[in-house]
Length: 104
Image (cartoon, rainbow, N blue to C red):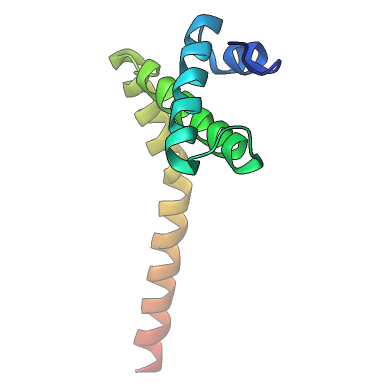
């Protein structure tokens, strides 16, 4: 069974092999048959494509596990990126309290 002509491109963009993409496509066709009950209709192809994208998304997530060194670095960068926002929030809270104290 031939998959769609765009399947190798999708596999390359997702970082999976073409053979794995063809397996996922076959699984999507089976799912579409179960869901629609018909083969070859526009609903069938739409269901197959939707399920293929869902399966490829799961495949990408299962292959993307950050290493401890990278995740620690990312966490540090995230915390450092939030520091200016925290400082601005603290300044605005202090300013609001000062104005409330003067008004009272």
